Amino acid sequence: MTHSVITAQLAVAAEDLQLARQGLQHTLDYLREQGQPWALSGVQSIVEDPYVIGKIGDLHIRLEVAAALLERAQTLTAEPEPHLIASTEAVIASADALQAVGNIQHELTGQRQSLPPQTGREPLRWHYQILGNHRLNGVVPPQLQE
Image (tube, rainbow, N blue to C red):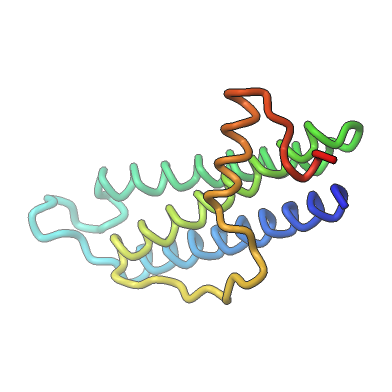
């Protein structure tokens, strides 16, 4: 059962990361091709705006962190507990990256990418609970308890 939970979590994290990457690319394309600078920004192009540049840098880091955590989770296979914790971290990081991309995309372009329905997924708050309880109190994740 634990293996199937981990496999499902890795699939969710990979899907969210892919959607985040697509959303970021869509945002970059829009900004480069259609984006208009804020009238009082003092720049000729929106891609020269320090605020916009900083937001894109922030998104890039979030995506790289999510990708690194997903890659780490995919390579851990020895013990179920560290593997489950790593896959939980990847789920959280990928969901965070996807949410951040959606928020910044809406802020900078006025658009928001439409996402497929997220049916059959555990609420993200449960992942935070499992991870926090494990890190703070050393509690074995419930998926591993007999």
